[in-house]
Image 1 (cartoon, one colour):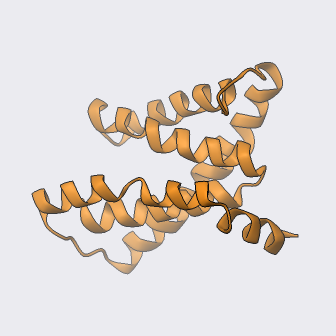
Image 2 (image 1 turned 60 degrees about the horizontal axis):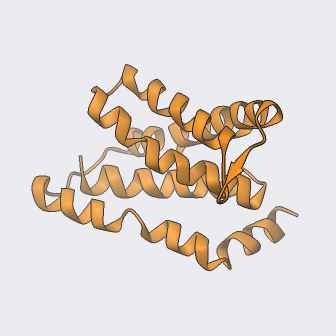
Length: 140
């Protein structure tokens, strides 16, 4: 069944657009800072471990709990997604300055939207790992 969900997610043009969204931001920051190379430990933690833990917690636990209490949706954006994304951004204040923590809100909204759209953690997990890969490769 997971392969069927994967096929559904990857065959959706809207998901493919979500994959392309960060490119202008990555290009802008790569011109400012140059390319950084990550160690194997950093790759494991930043590109796999942290996204998996964050998605399991925020989209796997928090978003469904909030959705049970607030099922309102505006143009395919759920109240649960907005509230979860606010919590996601707030959680980044522990490791980032307020500006960078706030910037995690938009990707979080995209991750939450994909969870709502496909009803699987696979979609936000793929997006989160992919977004982190681009960000840490080009922008840090």
